[in-house]
Length: 334
Image 1 (tube, rainbow, N blue to C red):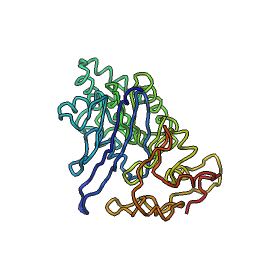
Image 2: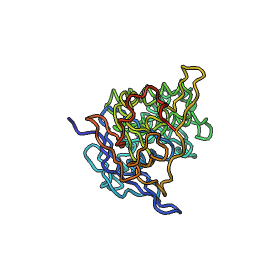
Image 3: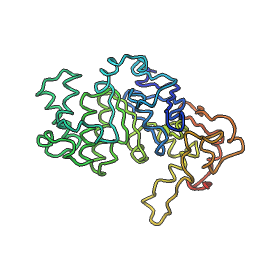
Image 4: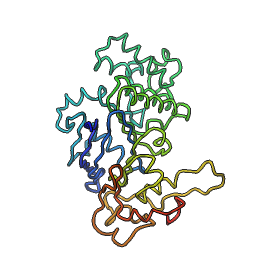
């Protein structure tokens, strides 16, 4: 097998806060192949965005990587000089940020922001970069691109700004696209258009994609594999079809049960009991055990790393067999 496009090995990220040092990402192992889309799901605060920022080398000042390797196309990004990493960002490695208002320069016209990367990284002339920007604005569903190119970010709606951010990330045809909830502010029609564009990117030029979202149906539509994150660590990894049809961790099962069954009228909504743990005060043993309807006495002891169940599946639950034979995703939950 060829080397993966991206390989994250034992990545651990800690944050300094007023309450001490918190581990936001804990010993994460993850790969993304060429032309492969991998989804990362989990509740808010589970470490998904921190993982993406660590890969890109854009952690805030109060955060640091304390362990691990980030191998991109055979090179460890952690060992690169700032200048080398800066050349990769935008060209081969791009990110779609969740907050479009802070991702865009407020005093720069949006067309110039999209055109900046092709001019810097691809050596395009001003007219060539302008043509690239116009084409991408049309592809992401921005109406009247020639007029919108002259607008400033504050003159656009949130959904329109998000499309500008996506067009900027795609402007150089990156080899790896990191997506942090990229379609949250978009209506379903534009969302489908953007997802089709991203899928085409992975298929046509062999780009890889790491896609963070709360929207499980989007993962089912876009991604081949999914990684489930809880309290900073991965608790389940596997092909989307297998994980969604036969989850091997109670947390994954809880997330799936929480998706509204819109095709069945009157079915009550379900949720995972309790709240995600405080990273400054994690429970003993498995971090999910206080919320788990399948917890056993030994779940209070030791650590629970991700363990391979097969060549394609891994789970951090030592009692995953308890999930077998349940006909309904809500059965057994507290």
